[in-house]
Length: 298
Image (cartoon, rainbow, N blue to C red; front, side, top):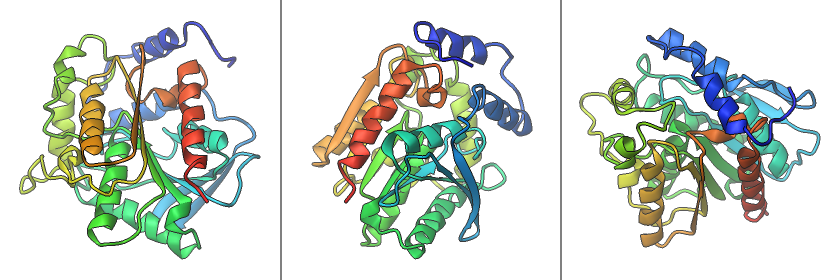
């Protein structure tokens, strides 16, 4: 399908609104795969399924992919849905833009596998990359929504252990506050086609066990000590309920002395780089990510 330049966001909104919001995890997982794959993967992307230390994962490589670095990609879906398939285009095109091979991780999902299963799987994939010969300073970690939160949680774990972390973090519409306290949750309720308070509450309840506080930094990295955070690029849209999850994170990171950049895209919705085939703004975000990544790799 040819790219739509002027009304891309309207086309995405129409696609998202074409069906009623599904009920049940099986149906929700099928729907995110459907909407994430609404526009097909480019023919020149090479895919390779791998076992990353026991965690299913997938390499995507464009013809321009080099060998000097790697993007470790963690998909969104509220910790309860999303997959290699649903986010394949986003991971592959981020890799193309930056000239990096992208390793997408198929981490375990709640409610079948609540916290800390997802972060354990992300950490296992990190260790696998190191065992494959990739140095920490050659790895960018990124993801959207819950994947953005996982990217931060992975960095936190490495930092707490006194180990070298990634060269940088790319956070797209990151879900950083599972207490769901940001003002934009309510302020943007009428314009966000994807995420609303009741649904976020359901996701958080499914992911966070009863004996773990939702403001625990391991599940809500907004409340973490962000001193030592690697260079971080945050992308978010004006029309999403999680806008304040990004704005407050960037403020906290800046106050902690981090090298952090925030780009808020007008009219864009949650995880908008998913639809880079039809959104010029998404392609601009990927180009900005490419500049960020290449500026931090050896």
